[in-house]
View (cartoon, rainbow, N blue to C red):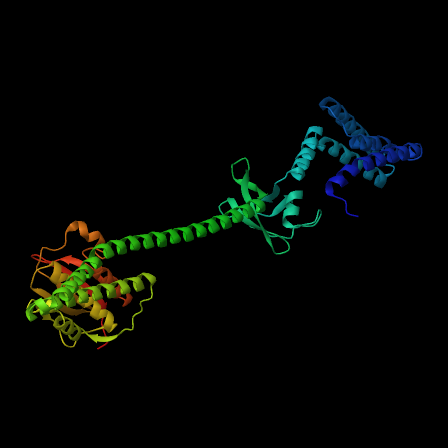
Length: 454
């Protein structure tokens, strides 16, 4: 059975008292025949008084004085008998002096109570407490510290615990089983008379429940944020779809309805007055019908491409494409470009792009420059490191400042799909497009694409 140190201290008093009484009785019986035995009577009484727990400062002083006097009396009797019985008397003399010294050094009852109170307070604290010396060696720990680290009630400390970094804050406290427990740690030095630390008191508060609550809140916050992100994304898609619907409605109401209305009226005129019309007028009306039909087809093709771009279903098959070849083909197919376009592109210059996409980009940029700028229109290209720049520049008034923020959005002018389609097709091919003011006047649109390997 294990006995704690403070229990041994408490048992020592009755044991010492019983021993003192026994010594006094034995000395009284031996006194007539043995002079050294006579000193055992006051020595035993001194030992018994030394073991008596005394409360009150005056009583403690009286008992201490009596104990010292009895111990000194025993020493005097032993000294007187040292000539007849040297060995026994010398032992008795030393015992008396030792008892007198112990009586003088006996702590005051208040000090004992303070020590017991401090020990009781340490063991009853809900916080884990560890007391260390100046070299960080463990001096004492309390019950809660043993529970927190996994030590038994009387088990020696088996952990070489470092002090928490920074002296205070959240820390993972190791346990004897290899796990750890989150704690709020605080370390306070115990100063000596010169202010230097002669020891340290470390306290640890178990915050495992708080950490679990924080983790649960963080998980819930992450779930809420994820849900909010999904809602924002869904709202953005709805807003985009609503905007597209409104834009398409406006476009169908004005831009699509106009060529359809023109085709219908011209066709009705041809059918109603065919016999009364000359061949020249018939050809003129048929040409207008064809022009409006081509315009309508182009518009519907653009709408189809717009819907594919919005769904993200446009993919690029990039191959080396000669820029001059594409630009010349687009210019030749554009009636409005006759005599108003100047091309300055090296035959060897090629871009890594989808040929169909690049053709659509040049068509839209050239049509935009011819429709809203002024001739001549310049088409130039040059290489800059690993990229090529294709420039389409007109000599018009340029683009108004209030239109620049949404220049590459949907439905900017008329059908309004040209520059929007240009931006998405260029980005699908890994490039970019930007607008610059031309000098001295005009608009310059610059397309940057990856250069084809030489």
